[in-house]
Length: 530
Picture 1 (cartoon, rainbow, N blue to C red):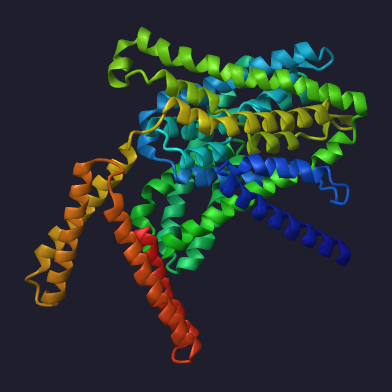
Picture 2 (picture 1 turned 180 degrees about the vertical axis):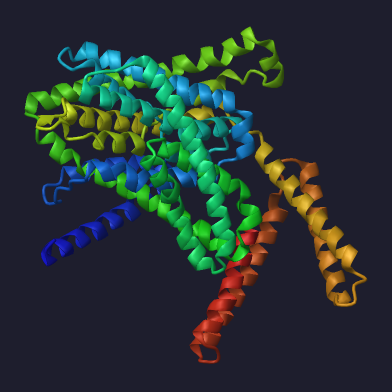
């Protein structure tokens, strides 16, 4: 690559990062999931003639974006909730994926008679997984019940694996012209079980290395490499890299509180949140920029016909999900009454929200662009441009239609957790305060303990305990003006300390290193009260 090419690539990347920052900021201001604006931004940039064309290597698309995004989502997933709702998650992540592949495949094959059925199934596999980022973004803005959030997040993790397995079998069928249901079923079980095994082994190794690394910044850097440490061996063995990354993320996230030290945890979360936003932003923008190359292969009437074809496909994707949700919720409880006793039927409004929260996203776009250019040496992959363009338009439709309407729909149907999550948090805070009180009281007679300071600390804990018990007695959302007033008082106090710290630095009475150390303590205290 010449020096001019390097400078042009660098300028393009800086420009794209700036676009990601602006669109993500706008999404926050508008209170909409940022994937919606990112995909619209990618489409808008693709239509600007001055923006250079971008050609991504299909082999690098999945490798670059998926491992860290899946690992991060699994790391934050509650293993308790995942285990409790494993039946519902499995019905969506495996059964619905297969149903979507078949429904989309047969629909496309009927609407485009010349398209081979295997290629139609490729498109179905591309469009079968939901987008974890869009679901998480909406769940964070609206107080959804824990059950709904757990099912949607768990589904979006596991269905990526089942969708990619279906995708690879469909692509192989296009390339070889042969497909066996029996062999595919056996291979699916093998790549899934072996992928989970690789993920567990990789998660164990990650935790041992985490214990060994003492420097918090080196530890954070190591964490960014972890998703690839499990993805690459899994792919080299021919098993599911997706399930390996998801399993390692679940395992690491479950054990991290007992292994990860505090000095690495706080900055680590900030780094990972930035990294995930960056990857998602670049993924949507870069994938959107690919459209110019794809669209260039169509003449005017062909482009319009493909756009018109995307509408019924998007409807099939959305309708199949809603149709699937209700029977799979009711039938198991009717046929096996013990299921209903352990897991009562959720309200119809919650089932409808789960059915409507089927936004497609970066995984669908990445798998579409990962299609090989040739099915066999010298033979172009049939309908590759149409599959990519249809995938992009359907993703855009689901993000815009379902993404924009989901929040208002949740509020209109009053699908909330009723303050359950807030109460659970307050109960946990109360339990930890009581544990701290018990430990301080047990140490009061130790000779090394400064008794006056220990008694002051115990009194502070007692005041916190009384506040928490009072709040729990009043119920969720009852912190009221007293809680807001206390937080405002603490922020005023910290801001006064911070201003004084800056004054001392500006007058040369302390150095910047001293200022930064004290500033870090104030920042952590401010984060705690927030």
